[in-house]
Amino acid sequence: EPEVTQTPSHQVTQMGQEVILRCVPISNHLYFYWYRQILGQKVEFLVSFYNNEISEKSEIFDDQFSVERPDGSNFTLKIRSTKLEDSAMYFCASALAGGANTGELFFGEGSRLTVL
Amino acid sequence: QKEVEQDPGPLSVPEGAIVSLNCTYSNSAFQYFMWYRQYSRKGPELLMYTYSSGNKEDGRFTAQVDKSSKYISLFIRDSQPSDSATYLCAMSSAAQKLVFGQGTRLTINP
Image (cartoon, rainbow over all chains, first blue to last red; front, side, top):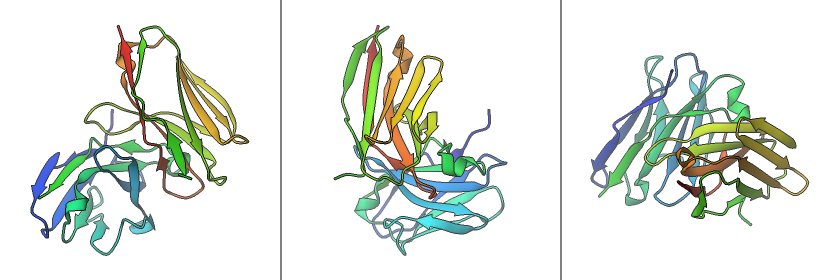
């Protein structure tokens, strides 16, 4: 069964360092997303990406964040200068064309980011 | 008022019981309503989605949406220990983003 894969599963970094989280979405999906979940809190939307550009982003997704689809298979989230409050589980998700609106998203297992 | 509210539980029931999980919301623009299941240390997994009001059944799971009351429910019949997980409601308008509830932690006791 096709799945969304994410690497690394856990990353520990020092405050101020750059972090790149990687995702391989399901191959025929067209819509890509990053969500995050701070421990004990809700899953929160960060950004959606379609046709090689950001289609929507939340207030959380400020200038410190960027996304890229560098090679047609990977989808990355970069945090330029990490802060303590960036510590969270980051989920990548992908969807087919119709699934983007109906909420039929397929999530990866997440990358846990710990900022010290 | 929070956009989506969900009782975090925990909720513990005996095997075989009927489980009822609920969310309320405030945004009238929501049209798509989802239930995701999340096992510990895993990503959310879509269980069911419903468009607008009404019921949808899939095996032991039934999703209900009442847009007039801004209230959605998920019922699990003949609950099994393997149903133990956190259940997340989620909603969207025609926009790209999903808005999640807090999640309800459910334990089914053998």
